[in-house]
Amino acid sequence: MKTTEKTSGAEKPAHVPLPLKYRPMTFDDVVGQEHVVRTLRHAIESGHVANAYLFVGSRGIGKTTLSRIFAKALNCLSPKNGVEPCGECENCRQIAEGRSLDVIELDGASHNKVEDVRPIIEAVQFAPTVSKYKIFIVDECHMLTASAWNALLKTLEEPPPYVRFVFATTEGDKVLATIVSRCQRFDLHRIQTAQIVSRLKHICGLEKIDIDDDALLAIARGAEGGMRDALSSLDQLVAFTGGKITEEDALAVFGLVSRQALEDLAGAIFAGDHAKILELVAAFDGSGRNLRRIAAELMAHIRNLIVYQALGAKGVEATPEQLKTLEQQSRMVESARLFRIADQLTELDSRIRNALSVRTLIELSLIRCSRIASTATIEELMRAVRAMKGVACPGIVAARGPQAHDGNPSAPAVPSSRRDGGSPYSAQPSAAPKVAAPKAAPSAAMAAAEGEGRPVKAMSRRDIVDDAKLHEMMAGIPGAQVSEIKEK
Ligand SMILES: [Zn+2]
Image (tube, rainbow, N blue to C red; front, side, top):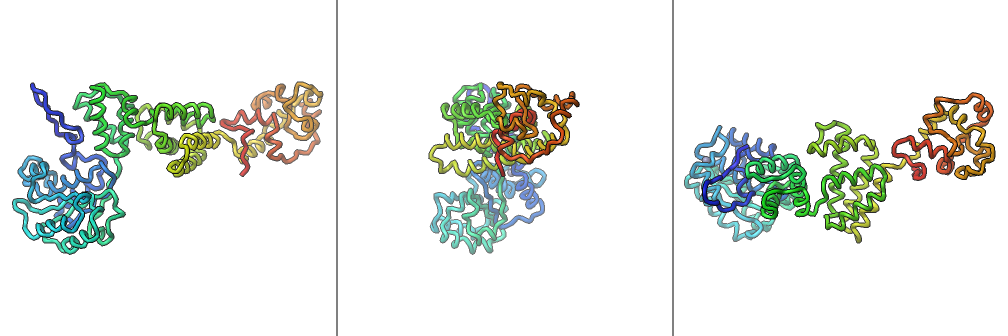
């Protein structure tokens, strides 16, 4: 990847902020916007450049950068391969330094009135001085007033052949439909976390910054898809730590929860460990972590798990450490439950903005998630019961043994009403062997004595909840708890 390195020798060079130093200079440098780059390149190559372009996307993902590269590519005196701006000719340098007479930038946020756009309308009348095109770049164009747009509209409809417009905005929906319909619109993507990590890694190598993968991941997560934010944070961290950057430093800057802690939280949810969940949330709250982001980050992890279960490692963008956890946790919960947890987290995310106590809401929601992950549904129970009737019945009967009827007072878990024949499956819990065991040694004599001739009654929810034997059997089903049955 090409970069603009400026490593000078003896005297210490002035500090150039990283976002500026590593701002992409060519189409090749642009990260994460391949769909836009491809189209722009093709337009230049084929000579079919539209009159106006509209770049829509959140801040710091490359709208202005792309506009300038595009302007350079259009006006470069000796473009490489016919499309890449050379970066060295007079036009390229003037555009990069913002002093080109033929590339005029307007900040729509501060210059949004009719008077502000009038100079554009006048400038359009004159052909470019030294370049092929006269290019107008209007940033934050959604801020322009309706009358400013109206003044521009005529020019936009029928511009002279040498005029091109590039509009950029963070809020595409606020741009008037009459304007959008006259532009080629591009929606820029948030940059993938893995792409930011790899770019940061590259830059850290060039800058000789000592940083580990988890710290890079933390910066990328904190930047939420914006490369500029990621580089600013890296800059800030270098100034703060003086070189060696740890995950903890990076997390502190953003108020983020560490990858490990987040994965532990997910693990606790899957294991139904409510105490651990509450403990972790308390720790996050106590150390000033951004609780509002936990739902979103947990959601990203759940999504990764679902994708991992479906496609394996090739489907997710994750660091090797993350992959290890995904591999392990994907075996803890089946995807149907993951989907229900995702629903629960979506609900949490939508309610968190209006929550009176964010912490309480998160605690309750995460415990609900863990119930979803660890509670057997009535369907699962009935399936298990049916399977037992078919397969393990002789063993169960055998397991009941003589104790079931001997009035042994040390059998309190089973209600007496049941012991005298209420349920065909009830047995004394202390004496009963594990579910899997009885298949091995059914006692024909006992079966004959105990199990014959008694009709099998349909079991109610209460029967299942109260049945100690079933309790024990459910222990053999991963994640099932009979006491937590939810009827649907
Ligand atoms: Zn050039």
